[in-house]
Amino acid sequence: MLISKKIDDAELRQYSPIALAYIGDAVFELMVRTQAVTVGPRRIKDIHLETVQKVNAQSQAQVIRQISSQLSDEEKDIVRRGRNAHSTPPRHADHSDYRMSTGFEALLGYLYLKGDYERLQEMVAAALSQEEAPALKDLYKGG
Image 1 (cartoon, one colour):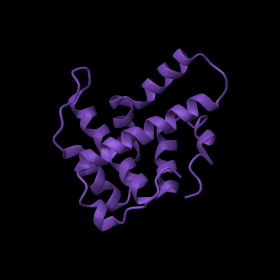
Image 2 (tube, helix red, strand yellow):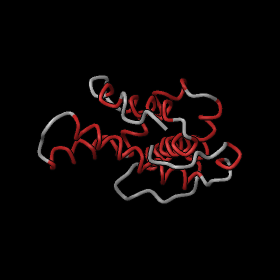
Image 3 (cartoon, one colour):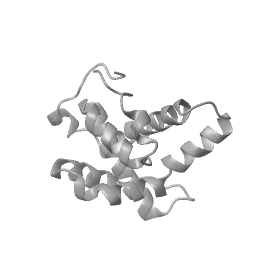
Image 4 (cartoon, one colour):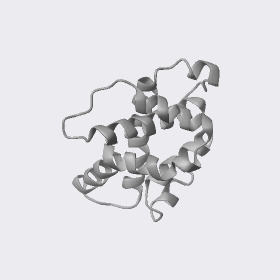
């Protein structure tokens, strides 16, 4: 696994939601890029466009809205903290979508740093279409 030290809940609760979203954004993009590359040979331009379509604020906001009822109370709290964190959205992003996507990224960062890779995979699979999700099945197994 990429992280050498799993961080316990008490310590993770002290992390700012923006820091969690920062790492969550990177983890999500890496997982989406990996999936895009491993489906078969294609032009890098096409891979890039597919990745950008999935990692944008609007797509992430849609995912978190769809799966919110499936989150634990702890996960909902992380999403809420990320959503309410003070940050400046890019000019091209809808403010509401940007806030929701920050909540989604904070959740992914939290799960990654916690070492809950199985739940992380579930969240990323929810963000991808059913056809693409199986490509991630064994991507982050181990520890």
